[in-house]
Structure formats: C-alpha cells, structure tokens
Figure 1: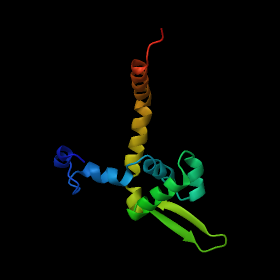
Figure 2: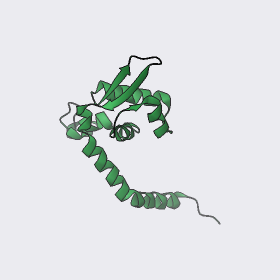
Figure 3: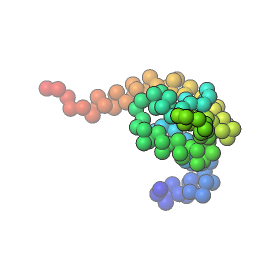
Figure 4: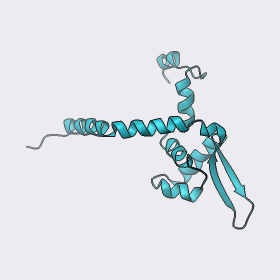
Length: 128
C-alpha cells in the first residue's frame, strides 16, 4: 500500500472498509457467501454452483473464511465421510451486505457493461 493510502486507511484496521474487504474481498468469497446464505452446502455442491473456481482456490477461500470465523466446516462421522460448510452466526451478519452487493450489481450491471464496451471500442484500432 502506498504511503498516501496508509495515511488515509492504515493497516491497523482503523479503516473499517479495509476490515470488511480483508474478510470478503477477492474474486470468490462473496460468491461463496452468497451460496451459503440459504443453508449448508457440501464442497462439491459449491463447486458445481461456481464452476469457474478451481478446486484449489475454493479450498483456499473456504479455509480463509473458516479461519476468520465466517464459515464453519462440519465433519460427519460416517462412511463415506461427509463434510459441509455453513455460515456461522458471525457470517450470518454479512447477509445484508451480500444482498446489497447483489442488488447493486443487478441495478448497475447494464450501465457498467455499456461503459466497458464504450471504453473497449475507443481503444480498438479503426478499420480502414
């Protein structure tokens, strides 16, 4: 982080947005949390619902969420073993935030796509 940004948003978690982004930031955590909002899911079910995520990345993201106390992993003592993931009460507190992120994306998706298309067209070489 640059010195300027450190001054505005120091790493000591004085910047509350940084705290939130540390927990749910990244490409997959928000999507994982969205899918867990309706109840427990097994690893392979999460993988099916998020086909673009690699198995390794899904494992890493779930471990980080578990380490932060957002997700819990429940191991059933049976054969074959069964493991599922669920939001903890702490993780449940993120539901309104995840819902708002989804709502914002739904509302502004077309505007963002239009702007990105304009920018792409502006940077493409013109056909002669």
